[in-house]
Amino acid sequence: MPAKNYDKYILKEPMAKSMFEQIKAPQILMLGEKNFNGAYFSMGWSYVTEPFLMVDEPHFHDYEQYIGFVGGNLNNMKDFDAEIELYFGEEGTKKVINCTTFVWVPKGLIHGPLKITRVKKPFLFVDIVLGPKPDYRRKPANTKV
Image (cartoon, rainbow, N blue to C red):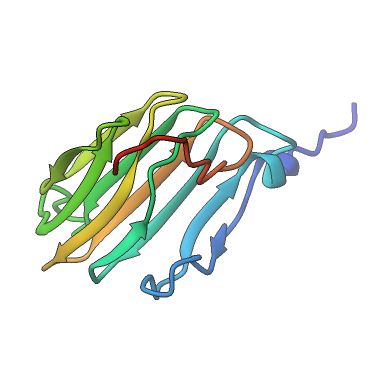
């Protein structure tokens, strides 16, 4: 029996340049639509070293999203010294992230802006979407933020 080729299931060195000029290091990026035949999973990992406005407006997604903020010291990922503001809902409820954290954003939940306000120690930003690609910035009407 001939050996099967499983190469289509493996993505080696999934590096890309970040869409944000403030993120200098190459990011890890995997898009289900592009890299895995339309799989409903996409993920990006970025190394954040400075404050900046990452997302400037409230929006929602057609898929679930998980956002991670992880200490950049790989020997101790709880070693986190940064501050991020993330807003939720039409009313713009502000939540402050100042420790290693993951956030679940259900499909359709309005969220944003996302402001990285302080970075004393670099951290990993993780963006996971349960869809074939990220679907960003569909700004809803009548949002107060």
